[in-house]
Length: 265
Image (cartoon, rainbow, N blue to C red; front, side, top):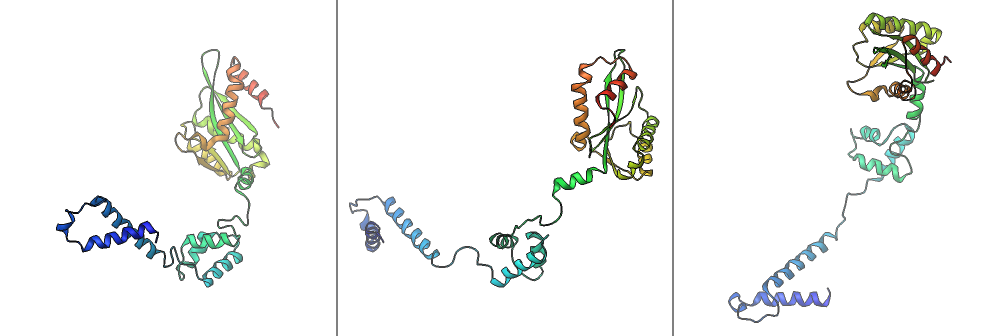
């Protein structure tokens, strides 16, 4: 204990034997508040010293549990720390954070991707089976508005302009689905999913034509264009780079400039 702190302790001990009635008559060098503060400081330091005598923190994990965690990780290389913790939870009381720490200290990734493709590789491999469609409009010089139905393949980014019309009815849209299957030909067996929005132009007949060919329709949520981001991006580029810079005379002119922008591959 430092010299100044020892003096404070002795002073407090002496002060405790003096009756309270005599204390008020003494001319002390310190105020009562200072003496109380000294007392609180001594008590705090005493309890702090006692708390350091024992072991602090969480107890170390037993060596047998550590060996079991490492054995499960090596025998099951596609398991992460969460899966290992779940397997141990039935008979071994060890927290998930302890499993994570054991794997990390052993140089094993606690949340691994030890086997299988990466997420980007997975999406690229599945892109062969995904196509997306959407409508967009073009203003003609006669004041009318033409509707264009376009389909984009996720893998190759190839664009197929299925049709242009002033009145996109349900029967017309269903016919464009048949035209798409004819256009795909032998490649139609590779396509498994069609992404589209919930527009009224698409009817149950459109989905039924695709379903007969083994293509499942995936609907986007309301007001979520990012769910059909690839098609939306192409349409945005088509507007900025072509339609906003070209005077479109009629539907035939619109079909011709769209074919020139995206020729068949």
